[in-house]
Amino acid sequence: MNTNVGSIDRALRIILGLGLISLVFVGPQTPWGWIGIAPFATALLGWCPAYTLFGIKTCKIRSV
Image (cartoon, rainbow, N blue to C red):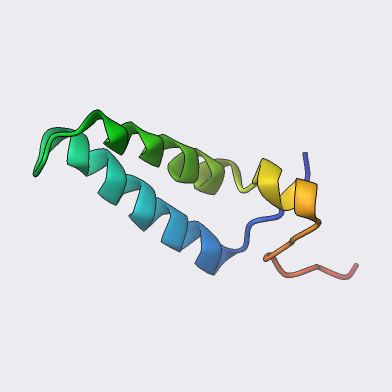
């Protein structure tokens, strides 16, 4: 599993994920907030299955 999520993308995913998850506990308290687990998990893993499917890579390629 190669990393395909860059650092800015990761930060945005963490913010979005935590924001959605917070909807479960604060605000409208809707169970739809649990969908925030998906962007949060992909940020922590650094790998997004949808990016792999579409051939997208937002991380910098390191040359050796």
